[in-house]
Length: 210
Image (cartoon, rainbow, N blue to C red; front, side):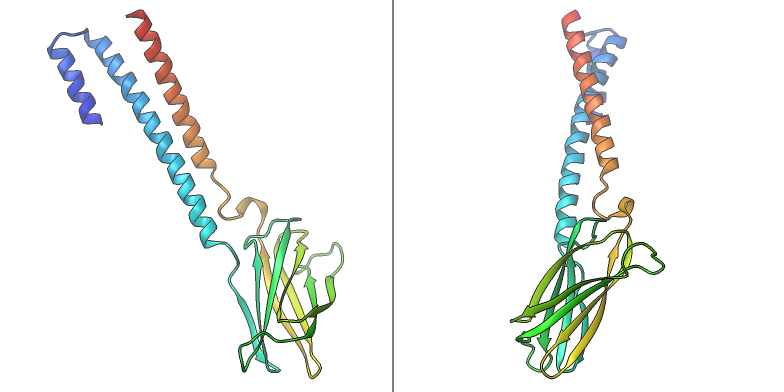
């Protein structure tokens, strides 16, 4: 694009189509307008691609696993993978028979969410009690009150055993939630838009005067 601008500018001078200051002004105005539009389209495309990639990669947290113990294996994950403070997070548990790898049938579950270390406010535990699970898989929703690493305990009661598994959920501070900060892209789009607007206005004014 820059090469075309230089060639066009040289042709105008050699052919005496206009005075040098006027030619330079027109050429640079058109260049600024085209370049600003290109930057806007590039930044918008980059932002859309980034959002889709982040969402595809972070649909759920990595699976944490407990066991095998007492003939069972417990898998845990949570969604969204970067919980927000006071926003509901889905805690999902999958309890399997460690021998057959099939869902464990008909047990009673209790989920206990603890507080982060050295947290002094509120209750020390939040319980979801007496959850009847017929097919091994269930979930509960919980809103974490602050940032930090929260312990999550699952107690599984079967007719023959009691198992307690410990997992953890990381709640990041508000200002470092991954995938949500597109400030620089927004700023770039705004600057490019202003440049394009200025170029359009100057082009129209010059057209009217000529």
